[in-house]
Image (cartoon, rainbow, N blue to C red; front, side, top):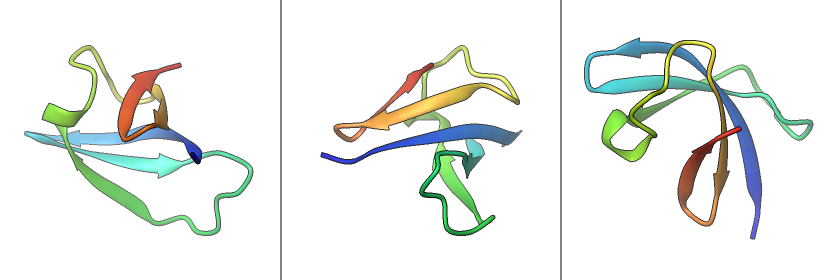
Amino acid sequence: MNTFQYQVASIDGDYANLKRIDADAESDELKLVARALLPPEITEGTKLLYEMMEYHMM
């Protein structure tokens, strides 16, 4: 399975904008993700690892 690294760019209510930061990142587009899918303790700048369809703090 693929793994991806993201950084929380901003938090807007029930959603967070994630920016891909791993070496394979091809664009600067942000990914909008529901906060219910993310660890509850995230803040702007938090680094996340997406693996096996789950987000974990790094």
